Length: 246
Ligand code: MG
Ligand code: MG
View (spheres, rainbow, N blue to C red):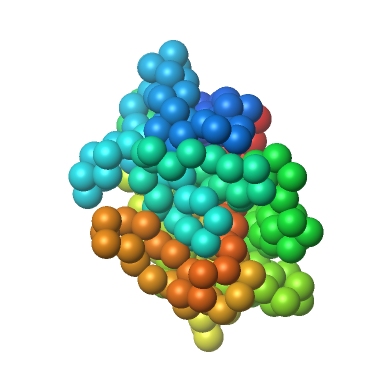
């Protein structure tokens, strides 16, 4: 699906709201704070900007952000979990403005974190940017995953296979999917006006995942740390434009 300039302008606005949710939840995430409190911070941003949530009610998801600490990869439900010094926390945020969606995530350390945790966060973010660089007119979509995988694996980490990025527009999750690894074929050719959410999930240990009993929380099978970074990006004549940057 290719978006026209008017549609891209709306997605740019939605992206700015998501960036603001990132700034405010990042500032609020400290030892002793619960993940439910971070959800409230994100709700206040949506209210202030007149945006709707694309997470709340999605298959009955009960919050406007996902909060995934430590070995949790994605889709954690905000609640009573109280952040501790040394945790890492992934926060995934989304917003809808005038029917158009933004979606982006980041992982942060809570206070002082281990050297391995800091490296995992740094490498995962770098893998996202390596993927974003591939979002150029005429390139093959699956070059994104190849670039992400190269950065993650060159640093001794692994890439999750079961959960992937996606096209985004009038729905949060549109086709085609955007794998974070080379899937064995080139995929669609990129055209201007296409918009994708690229979202590497990188594990310190093995790539295998497990689902907790709540039906949402995805964790590493080996219990080791995982990080997640995501942006919403358009393919433009001038190269990739990241909508969800502050
Ligand atoms: Mg997301
Ligand atoms: Mg996404």
